[in-house]
Image 1 (cartoon, rainbow, N blue to C red):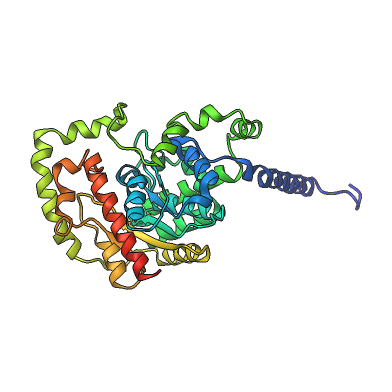
Image 2: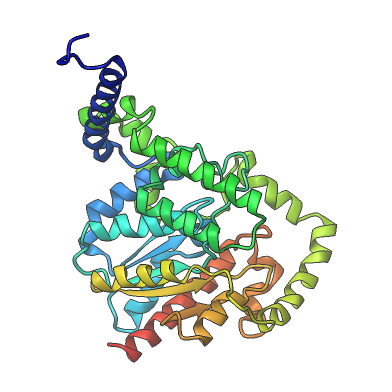
Length: 363
């Protein structure tokens, strides 16, 4: 071999480096072209928000408790009757936990909505594990929704949350590996070619409306009640809730909430940096971040501890059966985790009243 020849190992390294560089360049080009996932109407909601972003004063972001529990039309009508014209949109989604909700919030703010004043964000822990449940995209690490929110910054946030958690070390490592793997799928736009092509050619209208039609989203402004849903995924919980055993257990669960709320929380494993950056990004867009605790069947001491410690500026805490007694009546629940239409009507008016008070406090 002459002195000018490149050693075989050197050539292999060069080709590998060039290949990785090419892959990175292609990934960087393709990455922004991947559309929002269609699962659980996420994309349909995003498309609606994008089209009407400059008409909205507020958006509600969170899990199915938000999706099924806040009717923007009732909130808006009540505020209008108080002399405060208002228009809001419900961006709740089945199975959407805090890390995904945070990502969605940032994507909506990137659209620079002209008059958005309030972001009502469901107060959840920064849970970074996966409790895989069939049919719930937010709990499946390989769902399109999960892959989509695994940008590098959001994945780092998940890993930071895991580091702070008190989960066993092996469990943290397992979850960390899942997050890194999912991020890799995101970075290379794995399996997204067909969806990108459909988006670019405008041939994906049926896909966007596959789970929930855009007309239903427009009519309810993102809200969709549990009543009227007939698929097994949404009816099973109702059937269980109506059993004599569940009806007998329900009052016991509600009675235990105040003591659990009062027990307090050390917040020793809470991801405060994530909380601070979340508040900063909302403030930088000229909006106010309001954390909302939806009525549930368990105590929620963490948000109360955050408020007591001055870590959250505004908290609407509705998980209080002593203060909001009727909201916890059996007929205000559709199932153990979601409000009935009656419960939604009551909570929506409470949110309107709370927003009116907040407007008075900080006009």
